[in-house]
Image 1 (tube, one colour):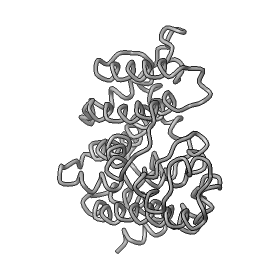
Image 2 (tube, one colour):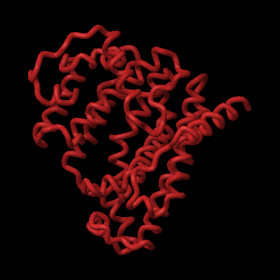
Image 3 (cartoon, one colour):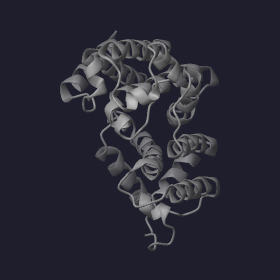
Image 4 (cartoon, one colour):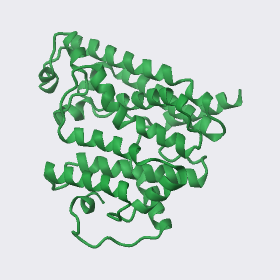
Length: 299
């Protein structure tokens, strides 16, 4: 899918019905591991389809920017992201799955600006530079993660501007969790999402992170700072489920429960995060999260 966008006219794009386009998006959403449910089974079918379409767009853009097995140069990847952005603005049929995206945009009044903000982050990934401060990292999250929350509120038909600070806090927390669980993988790709101002507090540098020169004590203090900041965003987001109604309230409670469970796992892993494989949620974790969410709903 990504290669088709990246190399225009490499082969004729198949023609899909709208139903086939949505079916493709559902398949993509179910075939990728995520910490939290991308398409929740208890939402309405139309809502699940819309979430899947939005997720598939983000997944495609991420693949174009980041998939190492795609035989593309940086300039080709940038051109592909430009092509995708133009497609969203002008509804161009550069891939048949986008018919589901266009239908979702129309049905749920999702503006192109939400997709454009995501693409800003993916372009940044192609010319990655470490973040000097929390402020710059939060700018990145504002583009890479926060638009997802706004799209979810629109799909839920419960979007209000007063909700956005809490939605942004949740999405930023989820993005930060993703960074800390992938410290080893990102280090191997020469990416450091730990703000330099955090590294400076332990007299370390980005190069110390890349070349594994951090002492156990330095790692401990770095993790303490980044997880405390992540928890601050999560704490701010706890009000969000109570601002929604119906099934979406439970959906957001489950997302928050999953985020809290991940922070607990990251804290338990400690400095192993600097050398370990990705920390994941497992079936028993999901069962506990769902059970707790149902209990809170019953109160």
